[in-house]
Image (cartoon, rainbow, N blue to C red):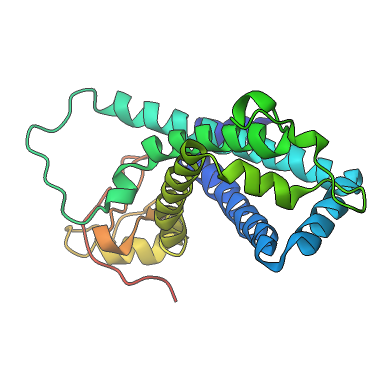
Length: 253
């Protein structure tokens, strides 16, 4: 319990929680996409796939619970980190010029909120099959094929025939791709933990007597090869040297 509390209280810990939950959710998106692409194989393939999921509650319900928990953790971490960042700088920069940050990275929080709204609608539309949100005047739960299975193929055809619904799906999936483009591209280079001693050698030679003193350090973080790095050595004794110098490391091999 103490470990969980310390992890959540740390900004780095929340970043790890958001990254790990994001990786799992990304894997689910790929699997969900592959399953739904069976619509191009015809009604039999898609309805057989849907029937398998609906008749294996021992598989589908644990997966749903885990995914909902991870989604809640991902959103909570994002909100907490955003509040923390804004509290650290309540007044914005007077002259802020974007140098290397992509549009996706600058809009992660906003795109994430819209994607969350899209996911909620998607669950109400095709999972809970709430009639009030499909705009067809039909109850999707009453659709069955010749074999008595839920006719998911017909449900999707009817659902996407509504122009506003299809437009919202296009926008939602587009923003999801934008959101994932930054998250996935950041996986190899963000929050790389390296040992303290090589880091100290990298940043301290320019400081007089830096390496001659006893240095007490914790692991440091290298953030993104695009933006250079900032290595911080905690000063927890009179003999400790705190040194930092921006540089441009290569991505870890």
